[in-house]
Length: 382
Image (cartoon, rainbow, N blue to C red):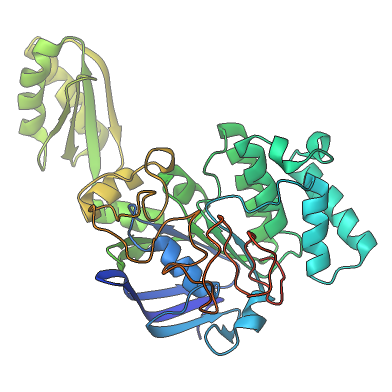
């Protein structure tokens, strides 16, 4: 039986760019799926299809048991969405933003205000709650946007790189909120480029590249596919790097990796702590002084490198799923302006095929307030 989020054979093209190339997803109820991939891999396009903001060329999508293509309005009433960029009205206060979202969901005035107060406290925005959002920092706007996505506690949530722009303390607080939601039965699809975030939150992880799912499994399963343990050595002097590398290659089960600027050599091995002791003895015999040595398991960064051929780009440095210059990560032009903060849906159209207003918000209903993301239908947000 399909999970709370299910997709089969999703295909979406923009001119010559194949943003989705047969994506299959299945997220069981009450779990978190982490969607990982380099810039331009198709993560945001997949989220927009699943949240009714974009129609696929081919394929099937079901969310909360509802066919996304046949009954988009019903899907919107069952989901919450937080996109890559905060979609808040900067002329309203934080409290007014949250109250407005509640009213768009047909909550009573008193209930909407009470929920707004609760969320302001939960996201540590109480002191700023009665200030216009245009006076907020980027991180505060991000937290307000996330709070708006949770106004009605939807059974299915989509978060597209939700912690971009948050400092470590606020990121940790959001992780705690996410864990509370999932413990209460919420199903979450999370896209992220913070590998630690996926490791910490996701029950399963899908790695996407060039519009295809190239690997899926738990964090431990993906790490196991990459190989066993690694020995890492940091030598005291740069002139000893070559000798240390020679020693490690003698014990290794694959190619070594040298980082000249940190004087660190890494090599895959088998044998555990016993082997580590042998490496230390041999380095001592060869007269190599070391600052640090350790045995570690592969990280998700190792998985990324193994599967895609390069490390994950950070969100701060490279933007989201589609670079800000309108090109994919290979430098090719994206006909549909595949970048967040631009048109309401790739191709410059909103979820109903109408021209987007290009002001940074994405709407799924033609009569939604301008500049706001809506996945609730009939002007309702998220």
